Image (cartoon, rainbow, N blue to C red; front, side):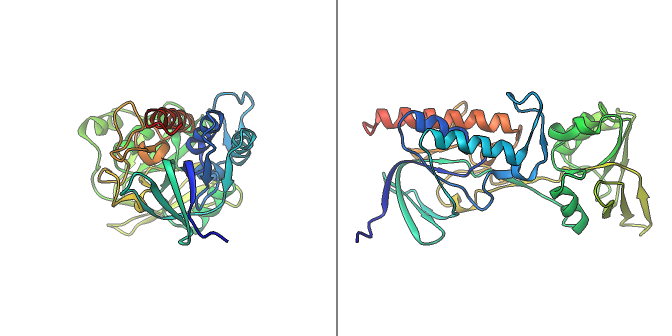
Amino acid sequence: MSTSPERLKCLIIGSGPAGYSAAIYAARADLKPVMITGPLPGGQLTQTTEVDNYPGYPNGRTGPDMMEDLMAQAMRFGTDVRNGWVTKVDFSGPVHKVWVDEKTEIHADTVLICTGANAKWLGLPNETRLRDIGGGVTACAVCDGFFYKGQTVALVGAGDSACEEATYLAKLCPKVYMLVRKDEFRASKAMVHRVENTPNIEVLFNTEVTDVLGKDIVEGIAIVNNKTKTASKLDVTGLFLAIGHTPATAVFKDWLDMDAQGYLKHTPDRTVTKVPGVFVAGDCADHVYRQAVTSAGSGCMAALDAERWLALEGKH
């Protein structure tokens, strides 16, 4: 029995909207893609309840159901979807080497990296529980803010993204509490001014969440002032976390350029990296938009870039 590494034309790492979109286009181009799903098959959307802002679903769709739809579409065109986790890569040669689950070696002419990013959480038990049941804890105001129209909500964060999400929520909600752990923002002056000039945002400095209250939905949050040690409660029905994301890119750090946060760098308006034949798409390379639809679009771009690169190299 041969022990030679499997040789592929197209390997897709990651199984979120970017990965499945890339798979659909790659499969239709007869690249015979193989997808390695990663530790969270389906990506972040599998931790989301209702998705109402993805085109083509007029009545909305749950995140897990939508990812099942995307997987079925990719498989219909011949994508080989495999559960596993890429634990090592070697991009030093013309053929890209990838190891799955520390043991299975795969060689690929092109690699499409769609590994996504993970939102940072506070780590409170009730926060995790309510997040997982769709009970009012979320890390995306743009995705879920609509569901809290007319309600009082709280947002945790101090950077530019937090300020942007707070002002977004303030257009929908009569009251937004913005909880900042330190005594100052980390955001740019322009973003701070936007918050300060929005009358229905109340900023609470030196404030941390100690518990999320409610059995099935958020009914309030327990907070403490970390200077005075004064504990209190806020009556809110939604808790938004805007304390950052961690791109799932550590395995590529010795081979690809990335910014200080770990987001993969690519040629502007393309998905091309500094390594020929390696392309990036989705949240692992996008710290600005982080939406399912933008991830899917970049997955399409990565597949088209890979197809064209293979044609130029005479491999397709």
